[in-house]
Image (cartoon, rainbow, N blue to C red):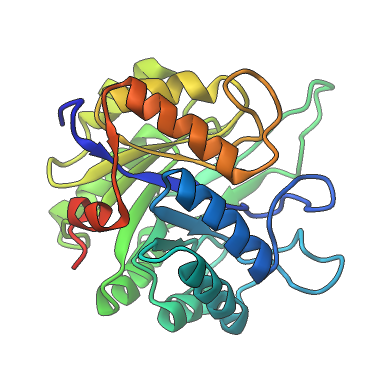
Length: 289
């Protein structure tokens, strides 16, 4: 890719478990649509969404209710004409019923495909685990279960990769016929037990991505994520940020909305000589009819 190519910007609106009573993450259909509109107006053409429990006081918990998923996706589409929806599918265990029901009901243009397993760990400064060690399990049969439904509904897979072995596994999926271009590859960087937010890793990771696939960085953390975004923009990748990924702007201030994060990311793209793709241009880049 050249630096003059269009860049597709995605906004990760809310995340998995962040408590809306403590952080400015949207939960209700109205909040999700308003936050998406702010990000859309700032340059995001893709909205990555997690659905939250709508019961009072339970907005920090995930939901796989297809009715709620449909209400939220419809509200976002109404607020952001032409926007591309990107639905999460991440669950622990082998019960895929909820994610698959949401995919089949809403038929997003893209969906996350967690492409390998990870010991999901974090340590506190006092030497204790931040949460009980857990395995985010994504064996091949689980990946294929998602892919079969994505193929059926013409949903573009976004292969989320938490370490270099998972990046390499994506091309193995292609080699054995599980995965056929077009597809996207996301380098998830900044999870404590995964790849660090180190810009120097990007050339190595990019070299493992098939030439017919698009790639982007998902940078998790604080101020350090912005140097990674700058390098990704320079190297021709697509870009993503949002309150799922960070609460901090490049100057270290707390971000109070998705809109201001997308504004900052768009500025970084433009500084690298990239122009921001419209939703129609994003469809063309991704090979979505």
